[in-house]
Image 1 (cartoon, rainbow, N blue to C red):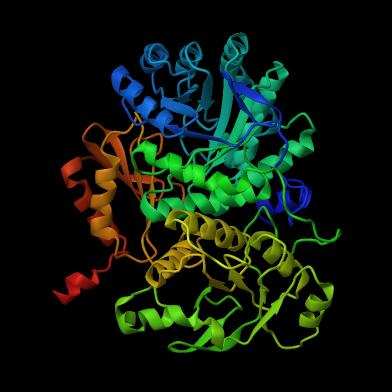
Image 2 (tube, rainbow, N blue to C red; image 1 turned 135 degrees about the vertical axis):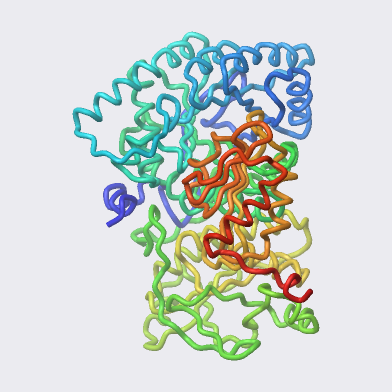
Length: 603
């Protein structure tokens, strides 16, 4: 059994009161300056500036721009004591402009910088994986006595910051990132959601021993499946610790990237947890100018403004999936007549794309040019069984059929799509494949961003639960856009990889090169590769640790210099930035992952 699977056995379903109806988790109120989090407060939106922390004027200007578009809290990196000290000038500049937005100092590696920053800001964010540890990737077995000694060392390093925050009324975010876990945690728990959670709880216990409770927690990862599992497990572990472990939760998918892909990945991770009722504040991390993050965040939280609003099905229904450890729901394979011939569905086959006939007719004339974005099955031609999962009679009728049938939820059911398909998967036998739908009602107009975020939240959440053998997206009426969107949701969910996957961190004051321009150049050279994951990281903080799942990495090592990675291992050092993209291509070729683009072959 995996570590996460073992956790599931110990903390079954304790992260949410009811998987089939949404009620927002009730957390304690934590004040950050004059802004309240948790409690009865709305879900807050925050972001992070990209300016050099020593450039006071630029930091003030960028912060004011963020506040102007609706940002409620602003994070600023403080990599050194000198940077942390300049937060005083930034705070003063904002005060002079009449802006009282709470500031968060982002700390990695330097407890001394955290102590300095706590004098000038309303909140300090630390990463337990590198606050008191330098990552060496050492492999060793820790005895209980050695482990306890390590915890005592951390207590000595962390206590002064907690005391200063206590004295000044400053809040703390204990923010774990997947892949930047300490060697101690890695050796005992692995690079796992459980390791992320335990890393944070170690620091929380120290703070609680000092009677400090002004804490907010986060569990960020670039892989939505890992991120979702970690947050669920965090809440389950807090609930197991006791009712007073009801601290607010900050949600975010780190290094989500840019464009549609970044927005889809954020919607899958953040939207899934908001649908569970988890989350008191969010940050959408895009490799774009920071003010572009705010409209996306606002649109993401809009459907979740009420604490509840769904009915709850009959008691006693148990989920058929492990909420802490991804595994695809097992179903039997069936053969269907598809657009281009026979299509296998279920039984471990690819998750298939279903479209209404009108979509196929609209793109039929250019089907050969659609590449990987082709429709595969037509909705009206499917031998589809539609049921109301709230009706035991209808689900029993499906289970009475011996042969596997393709089943979906009937339109108009009085449940959200996520709750309805979870209930369907729990009530019908595993042999029956399931067709997911992003909406259970008629679709009208609206903005493309709303369609993108809504569909990604619904379909991505269910796919990350392991539910679904085919998908039908109906929120977006434009045929080409709907096809692109549904395939990109499959890619971001990690269930059907058909193109290059990019892990690109949002820029910040630590970044050693222009992330947006660099990411665009890397995409121009590598976007034709299939199934290759490339991380683009602006500095060592977001380097070998936080790009945990990448095949290759492009990491800022020094001003104008780049280090290249294979997995977590640095293999090329101090490459001039002008040569680095070409050297990355060479590295991909060396490891047998390169293929020529169709345009190159044709020319």
